Amino acid sequence: MKGIVLAGGTATRLGELTRITNKHLLPIADYPMIYYPLKALESAGVQEVCLVTGKDHASRFIELLGDGQVSDRHGKKVFDLDITYRMQVRPGGIAEAISLAKNFANGEKTVTVLGDNIFQYPLTQYIEKFKTQKRGGRILLWKPENASAYGVPTIDETTQRIVEIQEKPSSPKSPYAVIGVYMFDPEVFAYLNNINPSARGEMEVTDLLNEYIKNSVLEYDVLEGWWRDAGQSQKELYEISKLIYDTGVQI
Image (tube, rainbow, N blue to C red; front, side, top):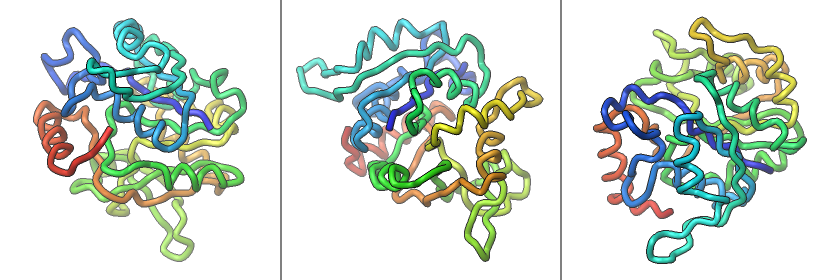
């Protein structure tokens, strides 16, 4: 099992904070934002990680993370990973970013985590389920206050299987949102060939997930605890930091 962390994007919603740096390098509580998804993968037993970022800030990630052996300034080991880097030269979407890790994956299963996603509890139980899953993909769902701001699954009441995912629907067909954890078997790179860029010129991860749904090979779990997307606003950065301190989330 190999990990992929996506840390690209222009982050225009964070305004002046990202004029000279990538949002994933901004502080959340005591650490840079990017530490949290990396630690989430390591805690679940994933040791080899491909970090995909844009060309403007790639050197900053390499300077911070190096080869993945990272200690804090007091000498405490933060994580012990084997990190490979890939560059996404333009904003081409999550699905395109995943495609850049094909050679890195080398025929193994992968778990992709968005670099601005932070979780209250470890992802171990979900990744362990995926390890024993014979084929297909697996995603995580969560109940937000406003599902229409996310990708929303339609779940068949009889089979309890996802039959469709809609991106930011005005009338959500379920109260759940698809969060930024995507587990795929090696067939993901074949499915990527079936995807065309959307109207905004990006390869959408929703389209990739719907390819798995068409073949009846997408499983899901409902996430326990809280989840936050740290790239939404300046206020969200503050609120997530406070939430981490208040709930005692460890890295």
